[in-house]
Length: 81
Image 1 (cartoon, rainbow, N blue to C red):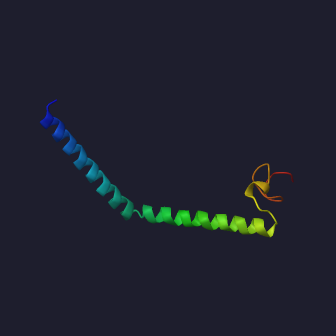
Image 2 (image 1 turned 180 degrees about the vertical axis):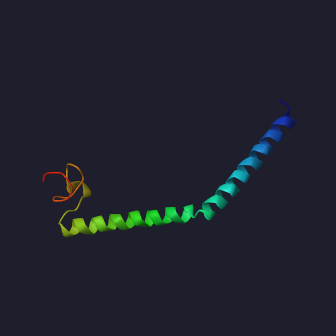
Image 3 (image 1 turned 45 degrees about the vertical axis):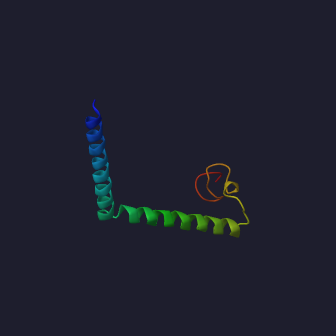
């Protein structure tokens, strides 16, 4: 492969990557994917805060103390009832 062929191949590759990046952003914007991800991240943070508050009310300071088996607090779910 000559130097000119390598440069042309590299240039075509870079143009294709640029077009892919632009089209991906347009698709993500159109389907509101970026906004959905942001909202899911906020929801996860809110859920973690709720868990912390519940554990604080119950006098627990670590999530892994909630329940050693099954990950459910006592009285919830199928463990130990």
